Image 1 (cartoon, rainbow, N blue to C red):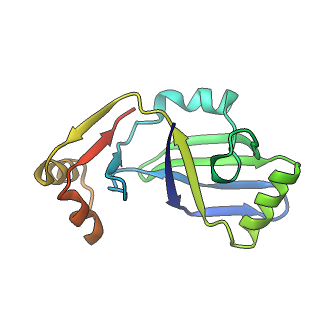
Image 2 (image 1 turned 90 degrees about the horizontal axis):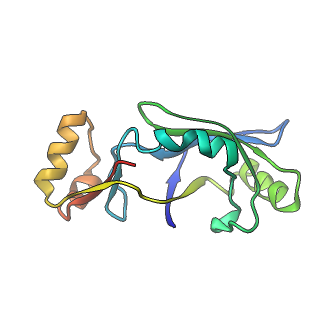
Image 3 (image 1 turned 30 degrees about the vertical axis):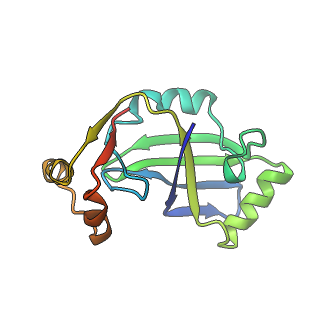
Length: 151
């Protein structure tokens, strides 16, 4: 199981135990050298909604905190909305989110298809083809190449 953490635009509903925000961004080159391509999650979103769960703190899969209600890809990334369960773990996480202590969302995933962009030029060509404007840090990380996750 692989993991990614993203400082995300999260809305925490203070009246209900619900969160929403981006769980993954497309086309950016993260700190571990990965780029997630648009469409990477498309084939698995139905299964995620039907039988997935919101894992606990620090990927504690044995202590889930809720369930997904909605998920879709858009031009920015993978957006999710989830219900937090009325359990001790769920309510603790919800309180920490509302208080601004938890500000990042982390996903666990299995890579089914990938391609290696072995050079900085290959990464830059990918970005140019998709119309992505990388940050200064991403340009620097591109020197090492990247793994492009497509599914």
